[in-house]
Image 1: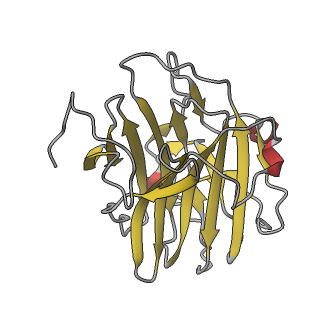
Image 2: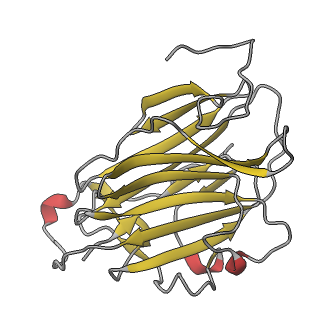
Length: 247
């Protein structure tokens, strides 16, 4: 059965985080209980100094809320991986095929500091393989709304994460913002995003945005893109003249 795990660690300046997943093709498979999968016991990581971290320990649904939108008929569960490297480590799991899933959580506002970059990272495991689906993060400004009110067409600031289906094979990085030229809301896509690893292992996806408008997309800690925000389709962002990065 197609399943998805995520462990999320973020530095976030917005109030809402939403995890969206679409799964269209799966195969049923018994859970593998081979003891050779076990390496060590899970312990909660030290999150000191990080603005917001989600490990899905404890009562996950006291912190997360499923979207009320009709589209998101699938319901995440907080479960272990089918092959555990850290015994007792849990994440959000997709239990049913051919459904859309959406859940949101809130966190305190982060006041930006001069010279400090914005960073987010999270893990995804397509543990039975993937023929068509995605697992995205969307970052919203709550604007006083409840977590359950968010849906697929709610305006967001950043969309980031893996997507693979047919000819599509990319790690999305999409920005929505109000154009300083037109005053209208625009959506910008990274021109040359990296591909999604083709295996059943856990992978770490990361995004760093620097104060000089440079950004980096990482997969498993490796830099896959180093660009200016101007390197987006139809971008109205202006490159910084202070710190230009090559590539």
